[in-house]
Image (cartoon, rainbow, N blue to C red; front, top):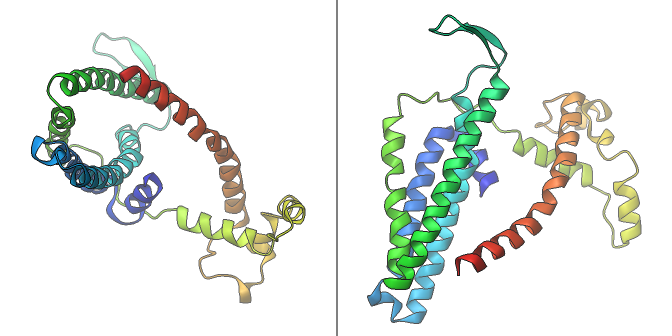
Length: 256
């Protein structure tokens, strides 16, 4: 969902509108989750479970779409791209470094996220213990319903970059083209073909005659090199699921 949300924002709606739609979807999922745990519904296990699963799926769609766009939206509010010298009201001249500014903003951003998560987990646990799951689900739903008000307040205040297209489609297409003809039932042959050093070289525009070049290949060889570096960097993220599985299990155990 994060990839899908980022693609929609970059290609069609822009980040602000995508966030607004994501909030609406997430709130709908939260409401269904609350309904699944109300005393009238939870006494019917099958109905409650079905409602619970539907709510989780809808909430996941909204949250996944939201998370991939909120951090870039914050970055868009910091238009400074190079260091400048400014004079403070006190008369002191200082150097404003955009890298330091972004770091400071995101530190505060994640600080408040973690404060909210801590308060929410403690509050929801005791709400579930003394009242019921419906109240535990209702608390974050109420807070999430405040987000559209914040988005509406900042509608004319946010820096809103219009959609300019996503590289995801072309990057995926060129990756699939590079894989073409390299896979076989023999794993040894597959490995050798994938690592023969020509994986990315053969899909560079300069290596493909114009008459058979795909219509979507509107980039140059340097762009292919950038995609290559991007996929190499993404190899690091293959280990993230292992980390998050253990981290979330640790977190769930502590909460329980």
